[in-house]
Image 1 (tube, one colour):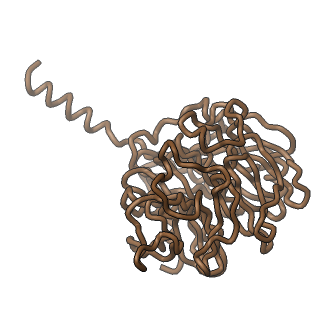
Image 2 (cartoon, rainbow, N blue to C red):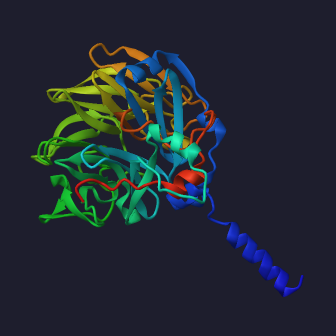
Image 3 (tube, rainbow, N blue to C red):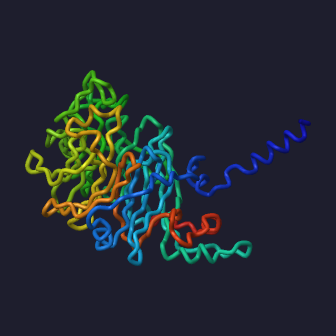
Amino acid sequence: MPPELRLAERDAARNAEWRNPAEVAAQWAGAGSVDAAALAFEVEGDFWRAVEEARITLLVTREYEHLVLALTVLDGQALISTFSLPHPSGLAWDAARGVVSVACTRNPNQVFDLAPVEDLLPRGDLDLSPARRFLARRPLLPVRARYLPGGFYLHDLALIAGELFANSVGQNMVAQLKACGGYRAAWWPACIERGGQPDFSRNYLQLNSIAAGPSLEESCFSASCAEMGASRPGDADFAVDGRGVIFSGQTRQPVAAGLTRPHSARFWQGRLLVDNSGYGQLCVLNGSQFDVIARLPGWTRGLGLAGSTAFVGTSRVLPRFTQYAPGLDPLEARCGLHAVDLNSGRRLGSLFWPAGNQIFAIEPVPQAWTCGFPFAPGVSNPPDPTALFYSFVPSAPQGE
């Protein structure tokens, strides 16, 4: 082949790259394709009624599938929409600033801020009518991304006193994330200190969730163990059964123990709820002990609260992590969401993804704020994502 033809082919190939808005927005070449089988679902009970009555949109991260989902009921019809991000984990909705933050735990770590589209730029070079009809749904699009070292190993996100905090599991500490980029080490348990100095050099505790209170001192944090040891999380011989704890933000000491790989600690009506993942339980702290509210069919992780209803995630148990789930039968664990009445412990309904994998976080937001994402497989008259991304008016975070 003549050199000029080879150059022409290369130029054509390069010109065709990065044309998919989903890939550009996520800064990830795999964001343009979603496995349809991963979105097929089954429903038991009154799951959709629980979502509809709460008037919410459920945002859900499925980390190993690189998916963020939004579930809502619009005009009496269930709607699931998607956005692809690399290994999404924690979620935090900042109502005051009008953004939802998503932690992404690849190397480097990223935190994406997404906000609803409220208007379109006036354009004469493209038909915007399909995108404009979609504006009533206030689709979420990225407005900012922050980058952090891969050694952070980001997990949970939380708003405390109007500031965004994140679990840096790789450093056994909680970091305050600065809006302009960067961070400060804000909190860590006393047990990681050596000679009065914290050891941030590696993951010793699997410090993985934040129960946000009015201040750091009034918050609590879950971890897989209470002290540093020679065997660390990720090691084959790292013992987990009954070693999980809740740390007090004020004392930096454990205030409750006996959990197994706890996740998603949250406050509800002044009481501490937590997913006891290794036994598939949703629990409530009673004194220094935990009472089981509900047992669910899988590795419990992800907890979103809407009134007296808890939306709890369950995941499959991956073969390489079976030692972390001594209270579960891996063959029975299912990927799904469950609406649980916190007053009675009754499961109101469930939604299962038979081909799903791991759920990390669940964040309910008002449906009036957003109905989800611009990509909705199977929805009639979907918006043209090209036109939407070409013309959306960015919604800047408030107060900045």
